[in-house]
Structures are given as C-alpha cells and as structure tokens.
Amino acid sequence: MQTVTSPSLKSDGLSEKAQYYIELEEKYGANNYHPLDAVIAEGKGVWVWDTSGKKYLDCLSAYSALNQGHCHPRILQAMIEQANKVTLTSRAFRNDQLGKFYEKLSQISGLPKVLPMNSGAEAVETAIKAIRKWAYTVKGVPANHAEIIVCSNNFAGRTISLISFSTEKQYQHGFWPLTPGFKVIPFGDASALKRAITPNTAAFMLEPIQGEGGIIVPPDGFLKKAEQICRDHNVLLIFDEIQTGLGRTGKMFAHQHELVKPDGLTVGKALSGGFYPISAFISTEEVMGVFHPGDHGSTFGGNPLAAAIGMAALDVIIEEDLPGRAAQLGEYFLEQLKSIGSPHIKEVRGKGLLIGLELHPEAGGARRFCKALVKEGVLAKETRDHVIRFAPPLVISQAEIDWCMDKISRVLTADS
Ligand SMILES: *Cc1c(COP(=O)(O)O)cnc(C)c1O
Image (cartoon, rainbow, N blue to C red; front, side, top):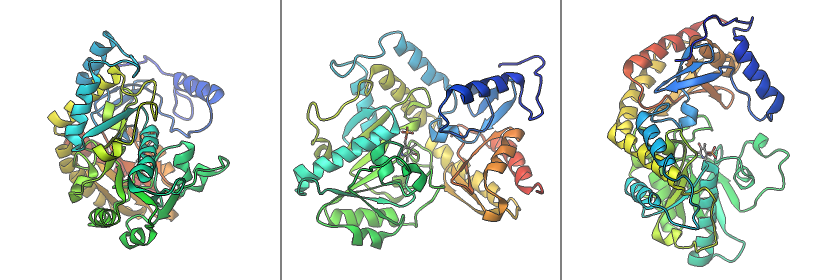
C-alpha cells in the first residue's frame, strides 16, 4: 500500500501532499460538494488509504455503490479482460455482452425487460419517460396530463426533472423553471396515496427505504398497501432501488421484505461495484413496450465494458451472498449502535447494512461527529443535518464492525 516515509503534518493534521490535492480541487473545481478532508489514494475491500498511508474503514461505500467492497478482484478481472477486447460499440450495433447482462438482471429482478443507462439519475429519467408514455398509449390519459405521485423527502438525482419533485428547497433554488407533472404525498402514508390518485395518475414512484432522506424506513405493510392501491386504480408501482437494491438492506431488493411485485425498478450504484457508472430501468413487457427505436437512448448505455462489469458485479453479490451478509451483520451493527450510551443519540434505525444514526438537534449537527470519525479512521458522512449514515461494504466482517464500533462509541461519548 501507499506509504510516505515522513509525511510533514500541518496543524490541521493534513500532510502537505494532502493539502496540495485539496488546494487543487478547491482552485479548479466547482464548489458543489463539501467533502471531508480524507484524500484517498487506494482502496481494498472495506478499507481505504489516504495519501499518507493512513487507513480508514469506509462506512459510506460511495453511497452504497461499493456493496462488493473497493476494487473487488473478480470485477477488476472482468473489467480488464473486457477492456482488452472492446469497450464501446454504441447501440448502433450489437455486442456480445449486452444480451447476457440483460438476462442476468432480468433473472435477479424477476422483471422481463431491461433498459441500460449510466447514472442513477438517468435511470429514473428513463422510468419517468416510460411511465408517461405508458399513461398516454396504454392507460389512455389525455395528452399532457399524466401525473406521477412521489413522496416527500425523496431523492432521485440532480437533473432538472428529478429536482422538480424534490421537497428539499436547496435542490431547486435558482434552477427554475421546474418540470410539472408530479404530486407529493407524505412517505409511508397509504391513505394519502389513495386520496392523491386521479384518473390521470400514471404511477407511484418511491424509494422503499429513503436513503439520502436520512435512512427512513416506512411503516411495516406500507409497500404492500401501496401495491394494492396501485393495482385497484391501474397505477404503476415503481421502486427506485438505486441505493437500497443489490443486497444493501438484507434482500436483493428492499421491496422484497414485503413480497411486493412492482411494475418497474431503477438500479444503479452497486450495479458495477464502483468500477463504472452503470444503471438500468427494469420493467414489464407492457411498460417497456412503449419504447420504439428513436424514443430514448444513450451513447454509453449498454456498452460491452459496462455489461461485462455489471455481470461480474452481480455474480459477486450472488455468490458471496451479500444480501445474507447484510441481513446478519446489519442486525449486529444496529444492535451495537443502539447499545452506545450517548446523550447525543436520538434514534438508530435501518435495515440490513443501511443504517442511520439520528442525533438530537442540540448535539450541534452530524458533521462534527463525522469529522471526528475521519480522524479516528472511520469514513462516515452526514445525510441531512442530523443523521450519520453507516453503510459499509457488505463484505465487512464482524471483527471489522467491532473495530469500527470502538471508534464510533468513543466519538459519540466524548464530551464537547
Ligand atoms: C444515488 C441515488 C440516485 C441518483 O444516482 P446518481 O448515480 O447519483 O445519478 C437516484 N435515486 C436514489 C434512491 C439514489 O440513492
């Protein structure tokens, strides 16, 4: 691993090298993020190393894109092999990887049709296009009137249409005009869903557990009720499983905790195990059937390098039983976090290895604790102002959780 013989540390604890990289980012980069100052140079499994060789346990996993851990050797191998053959054909031609990738995603999700994109935001945009066209061509909603119901506190990405149905004012502020056609109901409220439905409602689209919104688990039975309401009104049920899917919550998909059958799913993040941006909208014959050549596309979507990486990433999730690990170790981690006796902690909640630790407002915000955790060698990041998310790679061991817990409880019980 990377080592520096004698890093000269500055007063803030950063080496000169780290300081240099930070200054470069600050000087030339847009200021759209507020990163914690760990300058990562290498990663392996649950661990990363900074430019001075200090190691950290990664409890964020790039927002759950690294369920398989950093630089998983099997995915790396698939990437190198495919990169040596052919990387991009465009969808103007066919390639020998894409069909196999479709088949695997279809088998895993239980839905027959796949449309590949790159970022998560694009997968959700694709879902919205499919939903709207289905409303007009199948359900018979009058032109321009299709409505999509979403939940408050949602996160779907940063494009104009996706921020248009956000309830975070900062996400929208200054970016007007917004895209119409969305209706917001409280997350977890089945009767509000029923009331919001009109003859023009095309879909109810939601995260089965809200990730960026602070790891919010809906009341038991909500997804099942939502499914029934949607069926009764010929409304599509679409889950955004970009963060919750692919093993994170202890099942392959979070909606499987309630044995619900959605009409469509968006996946991304861990679909490549962190090697490459890969996402997809997966749906039924009926919904996907609305797309005809020229309706939608992406230069990189479905390229053979992405497909090869995606297949290896899915194989790792299945063969290493990452959903099972997440279920078992998630329960352990959650119990450990709940046992911390700290006056700052309001609630610890989550499913599998998607855990939120909410602090009392009087604790002064989650960020100072995240900073302290970074100093201790644990990478965690606040989501919203008062929640620390713990979402390590699903390959984490119990001993590594114990290592981490020692630091977390120290930081949360330290005075100040
Ligand atoms: C991260 C995320 C997205 C957006 O994915 P990007 O790859 O950042 O565009 C969409 N939905 C959910 C639930 C997410 O967590």
